[in-house]
Image (cartoon, rainbow, N blue to C red; front, side, top):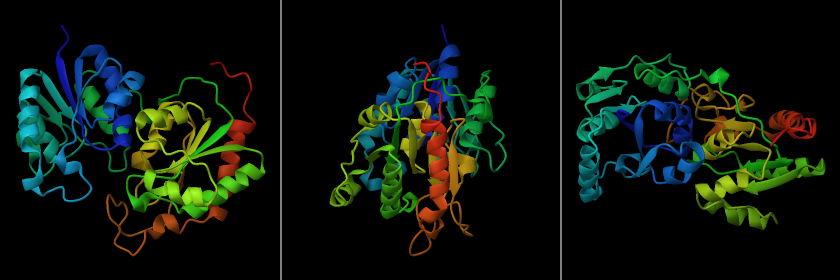
Length: 331
């Protein structure tokens, strides 16, 4: 009988996708249960079918009013605690240096609790792990967790996407969870125009609040309402272009080369895990990296990046992966 392992990844879609290598490796040795946001259920069959999922959105991951504790769903939180304790986990892990995760592990009743201590949260852990270097990718944290559990995960440079046919379609997604990570829509519109002038097929997708803007430009943009619909779009594409956001990480996990525009965050931490991933690094800022808010009137680190700067690299990226690629790539 495999030991029971509880894994916490309570944040965004991209964070959850980055955990994929760990979850797959862990499922070979442990009976793995993942506590994550509800869209983990849509990823389960595609990315880690051997992992059980408990869907739950913890209140402290909300973008606004996260600490208005009187509004927290306390009955549901107590029920979740009971559900976790009933499973009698042998191990519980988190790859975040987040005291809230560590307290959650303690309350889950997991016998052995592994994590990266912060603000004296080691009191909730039974094994404190040593953080990777400050500029290490998020994947490296999962590698450290994996090593502590006897798992061997490949370094980021050795994660290779399996061969797949790449439809000759550029998939451009213009949304992001946070507005400060969105490159101006006018710039994306210009990229679309230039690509189509070169007879490159382009599918535009966006967040719901961007649909009206694209429609006013005469563009039939897709507006995936959930992860399942987003996966269906990605399956019809050959490369991905977009912001530092969950769709880019999901595209990489589906085998698509990605081109990501970074502004307030660091690509060293969050570049999609694909061997052909390319990034544009935004303007320098003394406050970078930023997580939720910008200290200026607008995030010039990203919005100051012009189409003229990006276009030559986009053109080269698309040519290399869609136009000049071999035509006999196996399915």
